[in-house]
Image (cartoon, rainbow over all chains, first blue to last red; front, top):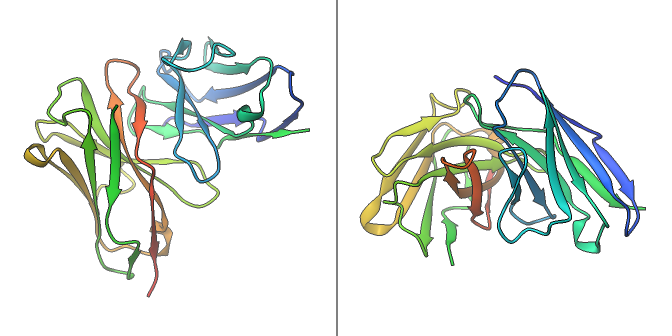
Length: 107
Length: 121
């Protein structure tokens, strides 16, 4: 299985800040990487697909980038609704796997 | 608006079978553009993909669960279902159904609200 390592596991930031979280895969996954946001008690919400493509209806404050086996999610100008847990997901090679998550907390 | 809704028992006894159904509205499970997926999430942990199914009935499973899991689809009812045999406490989780866009990095763009299934005697 492809291993996913998300970092940091938690992140503290203030309203208006920009933050970046990363997901490293154990092998090349050819951009088959998606990002999700999850609030407590809610289903995950798709933010970014194919490493860099913004899902329809998602704020442009979210962006994804990639460099080899390193993938990043950046959120600019943090809003109250952005404080949640974020998961990466790979689909390059079955089984589909998710990262352990990055919890974004308000400072 | 696409909506998915999980249904089934919230409590299952150890060694018995967990059965859940996902009812889809606003889209057709017969659409060739999507796979239909089951994902679970134990409390405080990351999601775990269980498997998915295409309208043709072709299913894929997580190898870690493959010996115990079965996913089926019923196009006439616009539903797909999950069966997990011989459950233990480790199968306690919130179970989600979701639509998977195979043309777009197999991203899961619509999810059900999730249903908590507890395995306990």
